[in-house]
Image (cartoon, rainbow, N blue to C red; front, side, top):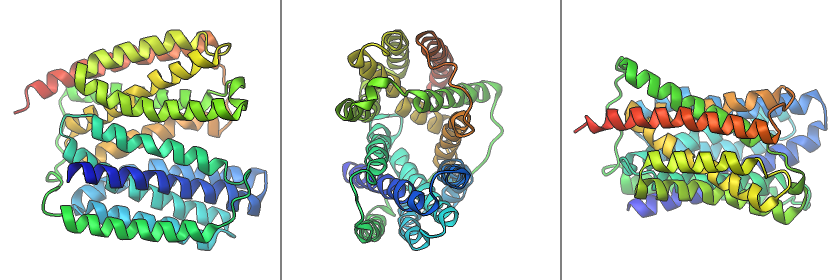
Length: 347
């Protein structure tokens, strides 16, 4: 049942992100056109899709109806299409739906993962491809929006079925907010900073060679497989070794990424390997999975804010990418070291 649960959530993760980005980049953009309106709509979408996962995660932890929470999210995404002519409203509804899906699915996947990062790596990986293909929907003339609505309703039904199968087998821990000790607080801060940095770097990687569609596709596949491999390798050789090797090697390769697409793609793959590791580590430190998942997605939003407000990408240079990636490696290593100490004392 574990494999089936992860497979269903991962497949629908791709579909939800695809549906949301089709709505924003295709329908809403066509309705609002370029300008401050669409910028505002996109920022609001991202705020509700990512930052809102923190309060929604706390609610979902208490409700203990994770698959139904995800089902409601899929229905919200479908509903957003009815408000496509009111761009900002559509973006808020779609963002809420995206957030609810991620929280419900994220909690269930983390609940069955224990201290293993492979399931969460598979779950988080598929969304990147949905975002990429959704962004290309307008350029290929996609206009069968009723199909997206049907798929979202079918996805909600799949979640209801899943809930009937797992409701007595996958349960949330009792929601209790305990005052963490200094070591836990410092570990959490390190993990959150790492995710902020990963989000920021991911947003500014506008290499010129990405203009080639096939290199762009391979680059996205590097993101997808990087997250998957990070979980698998982290479980095999340990979170510490995987984090240190992947980020340090990525930092070095970023120096050459501007001239070499091959090395750039390899750097991107290695850079994304720590995502399931940080998620798994934080969820085991905090215990309440929805709060942990939401805290990291809030960190993703914070890391993207500089690009939303169009701050200069002064770090998008060989030296800048090396420096920020190497610094994140040091911070994450400290966080994982503390995580190892904390979890070794758990029964």
